Image (cartoon, rainbow, N blue to C red; front, side, top):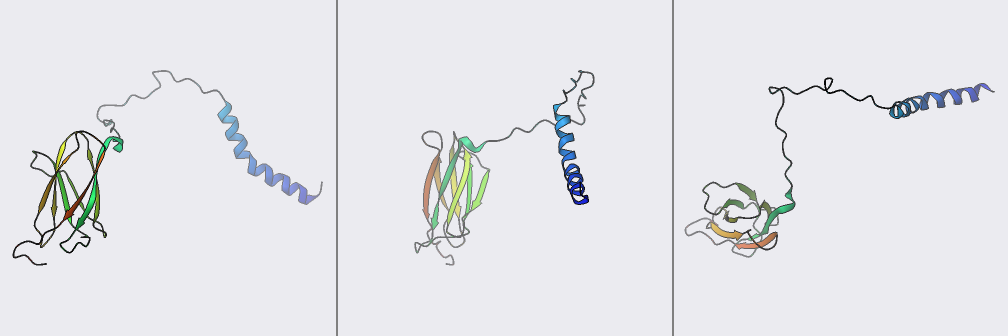
Length: 149
């Protein structure tokens, strides 16, 4: 063989060696672990496993907020709470096109409060107990008496 052919053979072998070793190790039968060799977590170091939350069953509230001139209203605050609760659990703002979308758990009635500077606060009740899994709402803001526009 010529020296150039030997270099190609050696380089190929060097490149394939890690792959061959990984395949050989993967084909070896795994040694079974005995219960005594499995580490047991202690109470002080173990944390309760967090349950992953799926949004598959959520209720989607989406809509648009318009000002008194029928133009979209960006940056309007939206707050949502369960009907009868005092504390607001969800908060969002409208985007640059005055649109919003908020996911809440199904099975309750909700109150949505829309608030913007210079306009009166509006409240709507949303029923997420029965029927579909989304509702579309449109708000038209009304100027506040004595407020700035």
